[in-house]
Structure formats: C-alpha cells, structure tokens
Length: 126
Image (cartoon, rainbow, N blue to C red; front, top):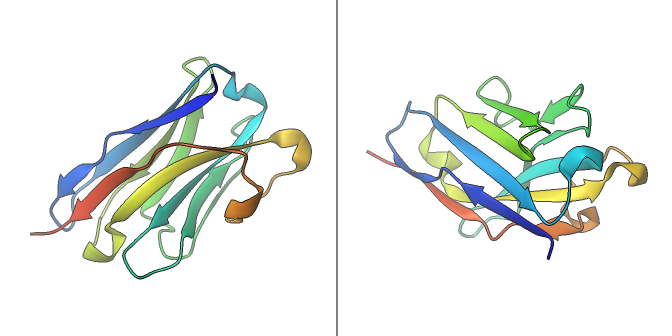
C-alpha cells in the first residue's frame, strides 16, 4: 500500500522552528516531485514548497520564502520541511503530496498530486 506519513508537527512559540518529515512506504520517492501544502481554518489550501525528484530544484511560496526550506533524502525515502521564524499565520494542517516526475515539475497545484499524507497540525502560539 502506498503511503505518505507526516511527522514533526506540534505547538511552537512565534519565532520558533519545526522540522516536518514526510516518509513514504510502499513506493520509492526517487521518481516523484514532492510538495508541501497547508490548510488553515477558513482559508484555501495553499502550496507551501515543492522539490524536484532529484532535489536540485525547489520552489517556495512567497509567504514562506526565506523562512521555510524543503529538502529530501532519497536514501531515507523522506522529504523534509524546515520551518524557521514561525509566525501565528503559519498555523495550519500541513500535508505532503507526491506526483510522478514524468508528469512534470508542478508546484502549488494540489489537484495534480496523486498521493497525500494524512496531514499534521502545526500551531504557532504564545
């Protein structure tokens, strides 16, 4: 069974950091573009960052640029989202998602992603 599982979320104070992990089971991430998305209450789902299958290219939304970094370790079959300088408006449920790289390096368009994790809560509050 193909699965993506997020971990590393939780409660953090403004200005703090968290690192989210997205681990795959049942398939290799080597040939997949991975995206991180988030969904906050009363807001639309937002593409946060994405990374190409070989890790050479990354993109980040303007709202997180300079604060969030996406990376991957294909040997560990895991993708990471390092989140620094967190702000209350970063509070959301964060999801990782995968799309085969043969379909293109598509970021921030959730509808094209085939596989999704269950999501993990990140809360930024004092």
